[in-house]
Amino acid sequence: MGVHVIGLCFSVLGVGLVYLVSSTDFDSRNAKNALNWHIPFFIAWNGSAVVAFIGVGLASAGSVGSIVPRLLLLLGLFGLLVLGLANLVVCFVATGKAFNGESWEYPVVPELV
Image (cartoon, rainbow, N blue to C red; front, side, top):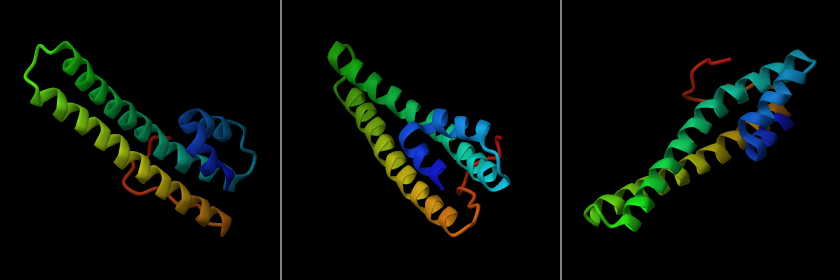
C-alpha cells in the first residue's frame, strides 16, 4: 500500500527502489504497476516543464512574437496541472485498492516493467 504513497513523494526513484527490494508477490505486483505508471508520468511531467521553460525563455528574450511564448508557457503549466491532478487521483485510488488487498493496474499505461 505504501508504494503508491511513496510514488507521490519520490516518483520513479522511490517506486523503483520498492520494486527492487519487495519480498512478497503482492508488494512486487503493486510496485510493478506503480512503476508502469510513474515512468510515463515522469517523462510527461518533465516534458511539460520543458515546454513551460521554453515559453519563459522566449518571453524573456523578446525575439519571438508575444503570443508564442505565452501559449507555450500556458500549455506547459496546463500540462503540469493536469498531470499533477491525475497523479494524485490515481495514486490515491491505487492506495485504496491495495488497502483492500487488490493489485490495481493504473489506467492507460503500457506494460513497461
